[in-house]
Image (tube, rainbow, N blue to C red; front, side):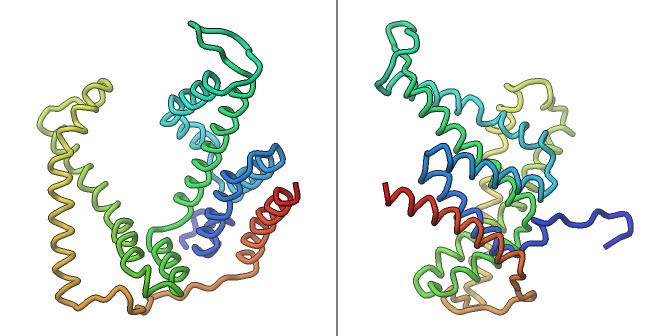
Length: 256
């Protein structure tokens, strides 16, 4: 580490398997339970994850721009379709208090899951995600080997596709295209870049398939790794804490 570089955050130092398990357990906690206690617990866990990962709140709020209209639509559909006590009437449609609460709860769950995914993506490298998936899927390698292989290849292709899209954008700007003057021009760029982007992806996938076939690659055979993952005490504490929260709400729901 260079003298001027910032030390990694607590979440960045966690084992990738811990973070992947935490995301899965937290997703189950968020979407399986709708009580006020479960929502507050999930919010507290996500808030603690944001603080421990040192992600700027501005980044989280900025990410909500892409799903804001989706959240408004979800809230509106629930508000005008579910039965209950009428709050107001709009064009012959009756908005209910129960529908509004259901829509807001569902929107809050989506926001929490979005922020959870952002924490995981921002603090975990792609090789770390691949190693975590391969390690956790080791007991099911014979059955899920091809599935894990496809998911790993997909993750490896993401940086390549992003780099190709950036090269296409730079090439169009060099030819005089104005891509920063409005949404319509950016949409036109997306449509015009789709064909060469897909062509590059298919070309790369074909080359990769030929290379894997020539090397007799078998997804059911365990491969060696350059670095070995080791879980420390903080990893076990984080995974056990989220698992205990999930177990408590599961037992409480079964007892009701």
